[in-house]
Image 1: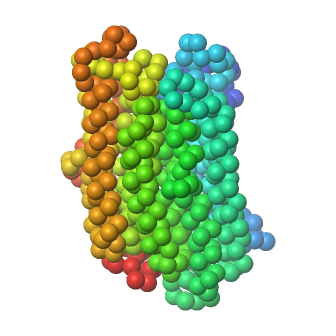
Image 2: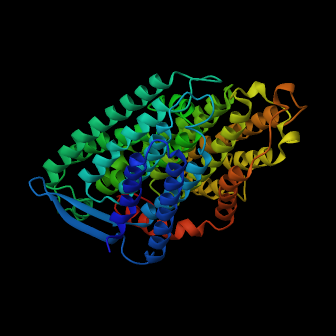
Image 3: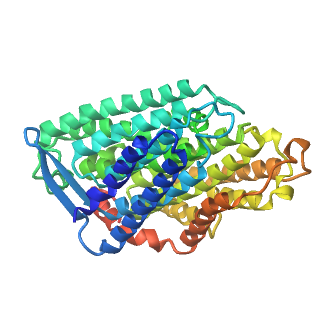
Length: 507
C-alpha cells in the first residue's frame, strides 16, 4: 500500500472533483470538501498507529525513479516531525472548511456560486501540497511542492476576503506581495538546490545527509555555508522571520479567516519544518556557524512581533503579528542546537497551529457579526456572547503560554534549550513573554469587558457550527498542555538524529 502517496492524493483528487461539480451545486462542493478532508484525517490517524516511534527515522518509504537524467526520484518517507505536522494539517482542514462555510457565498459578497467551488478546491489543493512537503525526501521533489503551494494560496488571498472593514490593504496588492516575497525566496533556493546537485550528484536527502555526517561526501565549509544560506533564506521567508516578514500581516488580514489560518498555521510551518530537516540535516556545520545570527534574528522577531501587536487597532492584524513573534520562538529553538530547544520547537509548531487557529477563527466569527475588525468598535461582548468571549480568552491565554495550555510546554522547552547555549537570547525571549500578556489581556479588556456598546448590542453568541469548530481546538490546547508526550514521543527521535549530526550540538 503506498500509504504516503494516498495521503496527499486524497485531497488533490478531491480538489479536482470539487472543481468539476456543476456551478449550481455549491452545497455539494462544501460537503464534498469536508468529507474528503475527514477521510484524509482518518488516513493520517492510521499512519500514526502504523508509525513506530522506536523504529528507524523514515518509515513507510516509497521510492521510484522519476527523472533518471537528474538522479531525481519520487522518494517519500515519514519521520516523527513530519507525522506530527501531518496530523495538525489533517485535523485543521475540516475545521477550516466548516469555519469558512459561508465565506464564499455570504449575502452581498457579489461572488458567483462557482466561487464556492473554487474556494473549497483551493483549500484542498493547499492541504495536498503541504502534506506532500512533509513526506518528500527528494530535495527536488520537495522544492517543487514548496513552490507550487504558493499558487492556490495566492488566489485565496487575492480572490476572497475583503479590502475592509478595519485597517486592510487591497487584496490584490497583498496577494502580489505574498507571491513576490516567496518567489524570491524560491529562486534563491533553486540556485542552492542546483548547487547541491553539483556537489552531491543527486537529490536524495537520506544519502546526502549520511554522506555529510560520515565525511564520505566532500563538501568544503565555504560551499556548505553558501548552500545553507540559499536554503535558509527561502525558509525564513516562508516562516516568516524578521526582516523577511512584511508580507504576512497584509496577507493574513486580506483573505478570509479560514484561508489565513491555512496560511499561518499550516503552510508557513513548511518553512520551520524545512529548517529542522534540510538546513540542519544537510548542512550541520553551517548550521552551527550561522546559529548565533539566526538566534539573534529570532529574538528580534519575538520582540518585534509582540511590540507591533500591542500597537494594532485591527484585531486580525494584531493576531497576525503575534504569529511573527511565535515563529521567532520556533526558529530560536531550531538553531539553539540543543535537544530541548529542537523538541520544544517541534512541539511549538503543533501548538502554534492549534492556538492561532482558535484565536483567529473566533475573532473572525466576531468580526463577521459586527462587520468590523477595529478593536475600538467593540465592548462588553462577554455580557451578550459569553461563550464567544470565553473561548477567545482561552485561546488568547494559550498564545501567551499560560501553564496548563499547550504552548506553555513548548515555549518552556525552547527557553531551556536556548539558555544552555545563548543565555542572553534566552533572557530577552523570556522577558518578551510579558509583552504577550499585555497585548492579549489589553485586547480582551477593550473588546470583551466593560459596558456593552450600542454598536455591539446585536452580537450573538457562537452557533452550533461554530462550536463544532472551536471546541476541538480548545480541547486540543488542554490535552497538549497536560500531556505533551502525544507529540514529543513522535518528534524526539527526529530531534536526536538532527542533534547527532551537528558538531557542537548539545544533546
